[in-house]
Image (cartoon, rainbow, N blue to C red; front, side):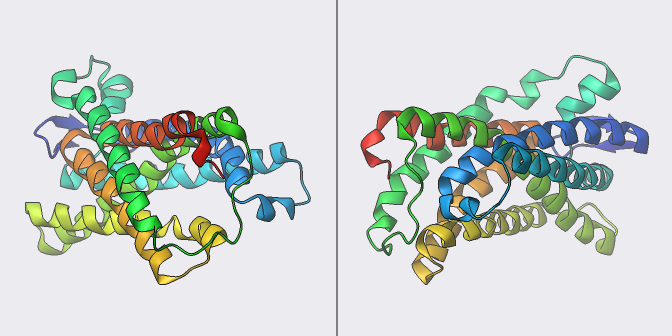
Length: 272
């Protein structure tokens, strides 16, 4: 099946080819799902204290669940993506075409810079919003600068891999695909932008349960969560549209490194 990526690069892939790519992403998402558990336990200590299982069992279960869930969503996203020019060009080049990726088109340095800029923007805006935030109901556990940075590093893989598979490769592609299916033509640019914004909003909404555990679910908490995560989500969605899934992942990972690794190391006094 010959298709054309949104950035102009032609690709071709069968259902089996897509299954191969989805399988690789599923394994990586499973490992990332297990790796995020120490960070989640630090963020929500009281919730994890109620779980009558060792942390490694919780991590293994989370990893298995993430692997299965992301396998299905990745395969569906790849299949739909051929119709609307969205997909995973780097994995396609490596696993299907067996050729060197077009790095000049993918521009990984741009993705890193976009991710860093998104992380810095969140760090700059967060203190302005935090002035109106309520007191923490359940402060994150003390881990020290080094412990928080290590947990944040491990969690960055989940954001960069699993969340991008779910929100960009599956959800954003699905939204554009629906429009293409109904209109029976290639969607215009505004459809991609609308899908970017919707996926970014849901990306922010996905962080509400964790925010509610820390602050409670007041309007300012909802606004803060949607705003700060939405900024990053729009940037990642644009990269997915123009450069492919892997560049969105790279940007997301870079932003998380700024937020969850560099920030705790530079400002340990701000840790709870």
